[in-house]
Amino acid sequence: MSFAVTIRQHDGPIAVEPGATILEAALAQGVPYPHGCRSGNCGACKSVLEAGEVELAAYSDYALTEEERAQGLILACRAMPWSDARVAWLETDEVAIHPLRQIVTRVVGLENLTHDIRRVRLEIVSGGPFDFSAGQYAAVRVSNLPARDFSMANRPDQPVLEFHVRHMSGGAASRYIVRHLALGESVRLEGPFGSAHLREHHTGPILAIAGGSGLAPVKSIVETALHRGARQPIHLYFGVRDERDLYLDEHFTALAAAHPNLRFTPVLSEPLLPTRRRTGFVHEAVAADLEDLDGAKAYLAGPPVMVEAATAMLLEHGMSRQDIHADAFYTEADKLRLSTGTSA
Image: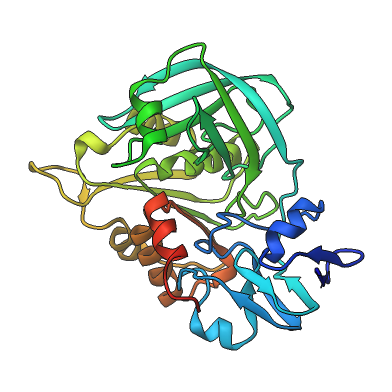
């Protein structure tokens, strides 16, 4: 027997089978429910439980704090109803709604950006068009391996899709892409997903903070804003460990030279040799430079520890949580740890 769940922003209830989450049932029934990771890590599907009872599977405290849970908030991707229920997703300033596509692509470009990051360019063969908002990601499937999430690094108006894939220790898919993927090979994609996308109607300052391959969605966001004529200040901070981890430095330096409203700041956290670059943790560099966050929006992408530290710093400096759009790159091991942890 299924439970009837009413969603305030959707006409008519949806049916949720026992053991299924509200999010997976909503998506299966065509509801454009805001979401991101679908594993309790990002908070994009945060919702208000207005009536009924749900059980929450394990999730990250970053995605849903104890205070928020006490206030009646839930994560739709972790919420399994115990009764008929009524929910409402949190309204944001802009919601990106694009058709969910399953497309087939062909590899048309491969380039090693660092010792462990490879740029992959894909041409759509069938299933398109693939519409997305800058900052979103897709589930990418290569060979016979499980799908893994990677962010688009190109602008949405560009026909060739670009991804920056870092070889993760123990990651079969990332290892294959970085070491074995070949030109002409077929790659399947599903998407787009993610709520940490560019707010195109926002005219205030943009603060973009990337760590490692988190530069991919940030690149899409910054380049899209500039391409569409953004005149507000755009501050891009890129944090990596050492020089060998830095990439597209010349590209963004040239972009900043061509656009006076863009400032690009690379930051090295563990340089092995003396350097003229900024050093330390990237969120500390941002904090040292901060003057006024009034009217600003922040876009964060990269390792969870960096995203969480930067989010905490911005909140301490008075930025509203609704103006912080974060995409923490949780590994499959991170997700497994959370899914097997103690339920909240």
